[in-house]
Image 1 (tube, rainbow, N blue to C red):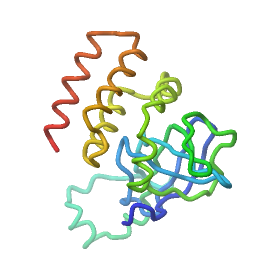
Image 2: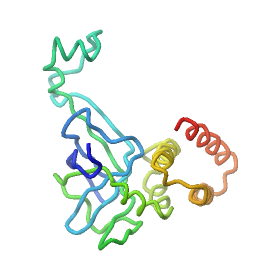
Image 3: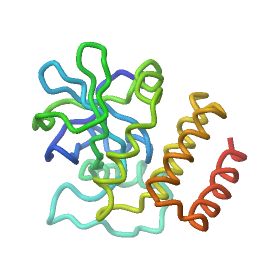
Image 4: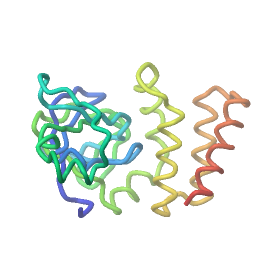
Length: 200
């Protein structure tokens, strides 16, 4: 799928967080990835923090068949027709007239607005600054495992060759300040980032 191709549609949302449904249950964004939707002249950015796949029909529950996916597609392809995948994003900023703003927009994304993966250019523009971290920390405090989300995000940026040493040090400095200079937490997180980068 082309990076700027729409693949999902918003079904619920507010200023700080929104949920979209994938048009195909198995065509989904990555955890920690940057996605984009529109509201009028705004491109609203979100970072994916939750992905859920299940039955679209409350009457049809998902059952374990003890078969591989290939066997199920051959013997019972109809069961895949009732699968759906939803994902939820934290709003981390928006773009208006080619300028990125690292705060919540005045309007939430529209219901039924389409969602696309951020393009390589949008990744470069958005992550040119670490100001998004402040919004991510404030919004996510009570809802998600922020360390896991930040680790996934760093892996995305590393894989896309956006995260050079300078940006990584800026990220860690801001991370440290937002965690009120919790040395032990920072030390553990740094060890995990090194392990994650070794996998790419």
